[in-house]
Length: 96
Image (cartoon, rainbow, N blue to C red):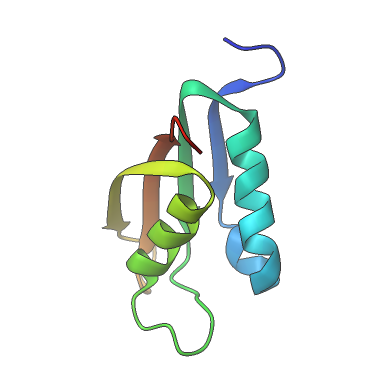
């Protein structure tokens, strides 16, 4: 493990609470601290900016733009119902 990095970085139901302009910086900070070969896990509510129709595509794009290679994106049922969560699993891009 590289000094001052983590093998696993998670963001669980937090990014949707940030102003839209702060999502990218938050994910870039996650990229900075994620060790080479590490993993980022994002669990998000399907809450996206106005005008965005596909929560999976939105969160996948945000993660990719922050310098990660997205390994998978899927929907996961929420306990108690409601729209499913969006899960994005990624690793740092070598060039990211």
